[in-house]
Image (cartoon, rainbow, N blue to C red; front, side):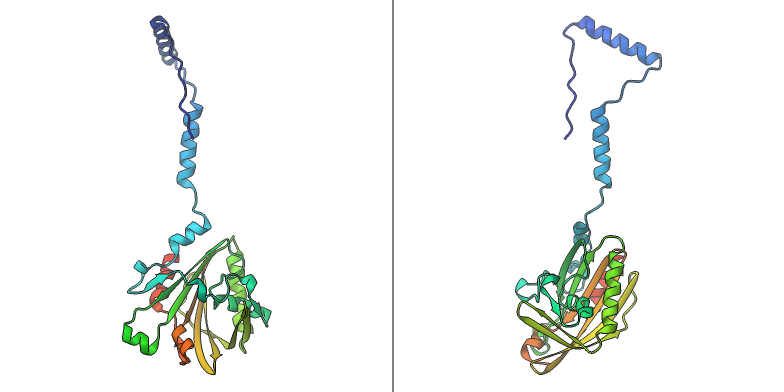
Length: 255
């Protein structure tokens, strides 16, 4: 907080006149007045504030996809009651190499980010279609990392896709998610590097096909995952594909 300098005013008009004459003489001789420390401090503070970089969390909040970025989609925070786990520490995997996939398919950030943020997009679709075919939800998890950490996390999930072809099982909080298979899937190149994958799971004797994608843009990872929750709950086979609208919109905001 800046404090105004207190200026002592002479009570005598003669002293005031003398001070003015002295100042004029110094100026005429080329003398410079001394800098005001308070003013310099104010300018420095203002300059620092103007150039202050946003925090990782602020950067993600400004970059995450929103309803206005898509065409008819609802974009909101996932409901807590439907999450598989609230943190990666709650998840155990029968094949450790597959842990990045377990995290990616359950809206958990990869590796050790400085900040992360998740949104779920649904639609656009009309009521009759929702009742007969269900709604595909596209989850978007953004995570910001210290320099080099995003590349490491991306490399780990790439290795997981290669190593977990015959499936794996993830457990958390008494829940179990068995995945039958994982295969690489071709996706439109985006960011500095990207990869896609398809996984299958069997729930109550019914098979479901799930799709995921990971995009790295600098020190930020965007993890996409899709699922048809109604089909899974109602025992109907599903093939939940990522929404191209949502993925393109988010990739465009990442730059």
